[in-house]
Each structure stands twice: as C-alpha cells, then as structure tokens.
Image 1 (tube, rainbow, N blue to C red):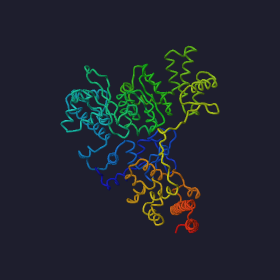
Image 2: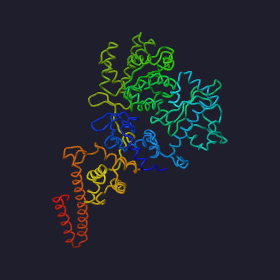
Image 3: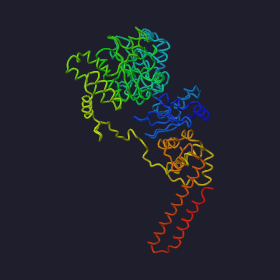
Image 4: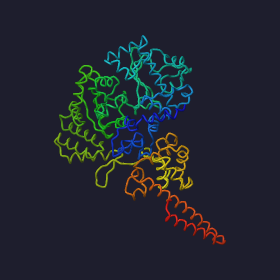
Length: 615
C-alpha cells in the first residue's frame, strides 16, 4: 500500500533521527554531530555519524547512509511501508490499516514478523481466557510476576493440543505458510499441520526494536516428553546467536545505568527486571556468543555477569568473561550464594539486596582467583601456576594495551610476581593466538586486516569533486541552488553515472536530501547521497582553500567554483576530441588547417572562460 505523503511528512517531523537511532546505538555528541559504533558492520573505532541538523546518518566505514526511514529499513530489514509503520507507532501517529492485499504483497520478513505477532496475541488470549491457561497464569504468579510484568513481556500460553494454533489459523483464514516458516507450526508426512509449542508457558523474544521474532517455551506438565525449555528454530528474522532476551525492554535502562547485567534464563531476567534491576539481558538458554557481546556493545561498554553459583554456572562465567573481554567491553562478576540463582535470590531477599551484590561485583581477576581457590588449586605452586596462567590467557584477549598493562600489574602484586615474568608469559600466549602478530617494536599486536565483510565501501569510483560539490549544494539548499546551477550549465556537464542517477531523481522532485532518500532504492546511490550530506565527506579543494568546513563555506562561492570546473572540464573534453581528429587527419594525409583552427579556438575559449568567471 502507499502511505499518503502528508502522513509520511508528519512521521518524519515527529521522528528525530538522533532519538530513534539512540534506541539502537549508543551515541556521543561530537561537535554538531553524534557518533557511535556502526550497527551495519563490525568495527572498533566509531565511524557512524548522525546529524541532528540534516536528520541524516552516514557510516564512513561501510558507506551506508540515509534518513530515519532508511535506518529502520536497513536495521530491521523491512520495506519503507513497514518502517513508516514502526516510526508512526513510536510517535503515536495513526496510519491506514493493512488490507489482505497489502499483507500478501509484504516482504517475506514482514510476513514472519506478522506471524509471530499474531501467534503472541493468541498465546496471550489463551493465558487469560482458557481454562487450562490458568495453570500457566498461576505458574507466572507463583514466580512473583505481576500483571504489569506479564503484560510488559507479553507472556502467554500455548494450548495442550496438537493443532490448536493451526486450527486458529484456518478459522481466521491466515497464511499457514508464514507461520510454518516462522517455526510455529510443523508438517507431518501427509501434509497436515501441527503446533510446535503445546501446553507450555510462552516467553516471546523481541528484536531490539520491539518486534516479536521468536519464542521460548517452558513445560507445564510432567508428562511432556520434551525438554524443560524449547525455543523457536532459527528463521530469517531470528538468529539465536545474535539475539538477547529482554534487550528491547532493557535498552533504555542499560544506557542510563551505563552497564548491562547478563544472566542465563527467562525467569532470572524477569524477576530481576521486576525487582528494579531493569538493565538486564539474557542469553536465552544458549551459550554466550561473540555476536551477543557485540550487540550489548551498542548500548554500553560494561557488563556484569551473574550466573548460578554451581560448578556449571561458574564455568559458564569463565567462558563469558573471556568473550566479553575479547569483545572489548569491561567485565565484572557477581558471585551468588551457594544454591541460588538470580531468580531465587531476588524472590527471597528482594531487589535492594541484589543491588548490594551488584555494587560488590568483583573484577575477573578476583573471580578467577576465587574459582581456583574453591578448586583447591592455590594451595600448591603447580596450582598457582595454572591459575595465574589462566588469568594471563584472559588478559591476552584484551585489545586495549594500556588497560592490559594495569591489569598485569595488579596480577603481579596479587601473586607477588615480577611483572617481567608475566610479560614474557603474555607474549608467549599471544604469539600462539591466531590473528596476532609481532610489530617491529617486538610487541604483540592484533592484526587489523580489513575485508569486504567489514568494510563495504562501494567499488564504483566517486564522481569528480566538482560534481560532488554541486550535487551536495542541491541536496542541502534545494530549489535555490538548483535554479542557480542550471542557469549556467546543463545536466550534460555531469558525466559520472552516480551524478546522473541522483539528478534523474532529484530534478523531477526538487526535494532536499533527507526527503529525496525516500525515493531512492539503489543502496549504492543511497549511500552516496547520504555521504554527500555528511559534513565529514571528502572536502573539496575549494573548501580546503577557504579553510572552513563544507557547511561553513559560502554556498554561492562553492557553486561558482564548481560550475567553472565543470565548464572547463567540458571544454577540455572538446579540445581532446578535436586534437584526436587533428591527429587522425594528419595520419590520413588530409588537410589539417580546419582541425588546427578548431583546437586553437577551443583553447582561446578556455582562456576566456577562466578570465570571465561565472556571470
């Protein structure tokens, strides 16, 4: 469907790009712009820039850019219509409802999002309106979950029947294929459909932007032959290694508290959240992954690990410590009393006591020392050697050399060792690690190889600087700049394909850059236009001579210089063509006087053009 332009404009006006992107990426103010780590490719140094003035974003690492609609489309992998709906809902703006035809034409991802949303609504209805749903509701209340918490996390119940959801789809005349691709129903060999989740308490899993992408399901009956928890399979919208349970609900608190609490289970998270520790996320019952750490890193640079106090929980924490440190984040660890998990502790002692545990979280060095002490390894020289070597192996994963030095000093003091001994051990360990190499100074450094996967700059060469200057002026200043520029030159003066493609869209609409991007589909062109709008984009010779940033240069002066350069380039092309004809005539033995006069006339035209300037 097509959303009316008036509503699109209203959504745009109500959706400040800094506020919207801040929900996905931690941004810091740098001058007039905001910067952060790009959500579209892996990087360690922020190259992602957001302009509040222009309402644009641009990444100088992967060349993605655009306006607020573009960001949501790229981040959530949805169409313009669905991005507009997401932003409209956020802004409280009503737009026309989808018709069956609209849903049929939606992208595959949108169909899966829609299937998960409708399934969650049915599970919620089951929880409150069915007789057997009362069992799950009682379970949630027994865990101490309030009505507000149940609603906030959209908790529900799947009926204990083979085809309750499948029959609901049939009655509602919904597309069963989308629900099958979303992992909600399965097919028998005879083609009949049956439900994946049956007789279970349902925990919807949200994307960071608040869309349901999958489900976790806890068994309610002893005769259920499947595991205590089962999860949705991976789908085009759900990658378990890249998803964190509770992140959507926790992201604002993570930003304000400046650290994330990381736990394992759904109930652990919800209990902590309800007790006032809202900056909590869970790895959804899966082993912690590098991708999950990178996801947390978009919101904070610090993580506090909270796992069960048993041996398995401690070993999981050890693995988690290494992953967090390798991901470049700071890490601390909370040790729970024996026999407790986060859920049981907070239900027994309350949120205030748990916050005291958080305040007393220890460094990974102290946690590892306590772990090895409990294993009885610190009682012998051999055990101490193993413990210290394990700590140094963790330090070897730390990419910040200065931070690593301070930690190494701390280890030396703690175990009464010479720092030089630890440095030699560190270099020995780092020398073995893949992806590490020695620098000329002899120190061990991480390699910085850049591949197309991490740096996706378009291969198309950029247009001449003059074309960039003029197109940028048209994008920033609209009708005024367009009229001035094309009163002196024509579209034919622009020779680069990117410039021609941009003008083919810009001139019929004569809209400024932010609005123009709504009409651009090609990702390379979209990135190029967004790059032109960015103040950190390549500064032309004209601006460098003026000694100011592009936004501070006189627009008319920049336009005049750009027009002059394009005119001179056009004359140079004509001189080159005339010179070719002259040489060809000489080879053929023809008279060359007329060709020679043409070349001389063009050279005089170039001299006159330089002296006359733009009038």
